[in-house]
Length: 500
Image (cartoon, rainbow, N blue to C red):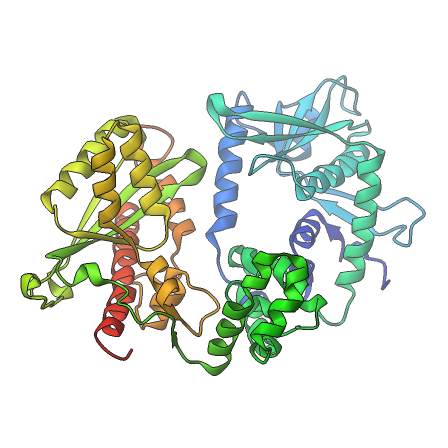
């Protein structure tokens, strides 16, 4: 099982959290070169949510460190808990360490008086996960020794203000046995000379700071997850029938593969041919046309296009920015001649504040779209069309007007998937536009970073606003997403007019 962790190399709650998400990630946290990490805004957003939740929970500013515990402050941060594993397992005597984000004073007994503390974490999502449970269990175990009194439960909070949700988690024997087993397995993984295998479901790797390293390994190994359309479950099915790599899938006979996959369900058998074709274009680095019909025939006679992209805060259910890039057709659309000059493109952001209400938002969008009644609205993915059509329905727009709007909206991503297979592991906007040579004006920016900037700009309330530079960064990113959508659409147009 490897050496027992010493005090200078403890098993920490941070390593445990990483391990629950991905065994390989925990190993990289301990052993990999920190310079190979990539910044991800996801963790910063989590900390922002945590801060908002704790502010809503506590009556005032929390104290800091052991001195605050001795005073009996209502909330305490900055406490490092240390201990050893005292059971009779193979890890007996192992050093443990936890950094609970918050301790809340509760009724009880401790070495400081007739009060005690319990660990508190901020929960994202709708339910407590194994990660949350283990984090509270480890903190509770070490806290009991630290305060000289029992810790019967922990607390998970989510949301802020009147929406703050509180969920108490009993820290009983069953949970502690699960924790011990996971600590034992974590220790074994950390003592390996080589990292554990890549995770089966790599969709969440986009949120990980080690994604660059793992993407390189996946590409070199021909990992099945590199094939667009293969998730964890489908990968397990393919491996069960002996298809264990991208190269093996590309070499498979589609009919034979369909027969083997049929035992898992007709829907999986139907995917055999598309998956083999996708693996082959990725293996060979070529593009393959799926449909000889034009991908974007609507653009031939359109006087112009509106490139549409939304920026959202999903937790607040807030579509805070509706961005449009206006691109006129300078040819003779009536004669079927098109000419698109990006130099004439103009950006039109419609910034929406929740306090203004949805009705006002819809009126602004409706007025803008009415200015260009015959222009096609291009977007990438279904998010924009779903959001706009649902807003129209909520605002009482007639069925006829909804249908007219629906006909103007064109999903470039859907058209791309219907007409072409590309040598890419992802058909997301970043991957496809980047493949076409498009470059965003800001390096390393994504939707999570834009959301972080938005929350920073919004500040603490209606009258609190951040730097104008922050808002400008958001608008620049949104505009570039619109232009990236056009980069993909333009490539589809070139394929419509001749060989791509």
